Image (tube, rainbow, N blue to C red; front, side):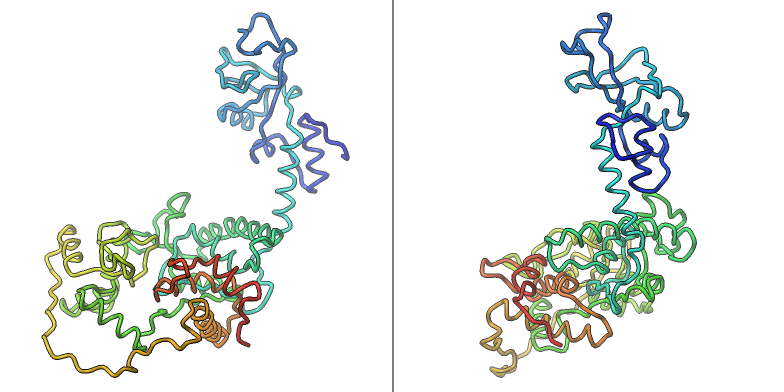
Length: 437
C-alpha cells in the first residue's frame, strides 16, 4: 500500500504497517503499541454547545480513556466512549456512553509513521547482544559485588555500543535498540533459570522475580559473568587509591587521624573485635553499605572544604569506600538493636619521625596540569585493561576516569571534578590524547 490517508481506517492502517514492516497487524496490536483511535463527532443541536465550541461541522475526537481502549482491545466490538475531549481539547465525560462502529474509527498518519519507524528500528537491532568485536568489556566500579537488575540493560548496551561521539545518532539509535532487546532477554533468562537473581533484603534467592520486584532484585557479579561469558567480559576495577603507594598511605593516615574509616575497613575492624568469620564479616560490610545507601548510617565527605563532615548518602549500593566513624557506626548498631559497640583504641602518642622530603614527592612538572595527570592515569589504566585481554575504548573508560578524578581530588581550572562527558570531549577524545599501543 503506497498511499496512507491522513486519517486511516483500521484496514488501511493495518495494510500500510504490513507493507512497511512485513509483519501482521490487527486492531488489538494497533492499540497495544499505544496508537490512539479517533472518530468524527458530528454536530448535533441537542448536544451542549461547549462540546463543539462553535464548530457546526463537528470535529475529530479522540478515544483517550484507557478504560475505553482496553475494552475495545479486549472484545473488538463497537467502541464505547465514556471520556473524550471537546473541540478545544478539554477532557469531558460522555453520559450515557457513545457507541462508535469500528468502521468509523480512524488512526492519524503521523502516529502510524512513528510506529512503523520504531518497529523497523527494533527489527534492525534484533540481535544487539552479539559482540561485534572481540574483547568487548563491561567495566564496573571498584567494590561492585552486586548490580540492580533494572540497571543491566543500560550498562550492557553501553559496553557493547560505546559512543565515540555523542553526536553519532546512528550509534545512539543502535544502543537504544540494544537496550530494548536486553530488556526482553534478561527477564526471559531469569524465568528460564539461566540468570539467578537475589532478594535485596536477604541476599538469598528471590522468591518472586516478576515486575517491579524483579527490577529491584540484585544480580551477583559472578552470576552475571557466567551468563555473559563469550559475549561480554565483565571486570571490576581495582581501587584507584592503590594501597601500595605513598600517596594512599598519606591519605589513609590523615583520615584515620580524623577517626574516619572506609566502610570495608570498619567491617574488618569490628569483625576482628567480635571474632567474626569471613562470611559474617562480609555480611556486616554489606549491611553497612546498604544502611549508608538508605541514609541510616552516616557517611562523610572524603574531600573538599567540608572534608569528613556528614554528606548525602551514596547513589549506589555496595560501594565500600565511603567514610564513616565509630560513633556513626555505633549509632546505627544501636538503632538496629545490636548489643555490640565498636571500640576503637586511641593511637598511642609518639614522636613523629622526620619524613624525607622525597617520601611524598610532588607531581613532576609535566603532571602538574590536571589534564596531563588524567591522561597519564588513563594510559596506565588502558595498559592494565589490554593486559587483561580487554579491548578498551575512550567511551568505556571515561566513567572510571571520572571516579578516579573524584577519588584523587583532581580539579579542573574552575575548581570542580571533571565529568565523564567532559573527559571524553576535552581530555581523552577528539584527538586530545593518544592511547598507548
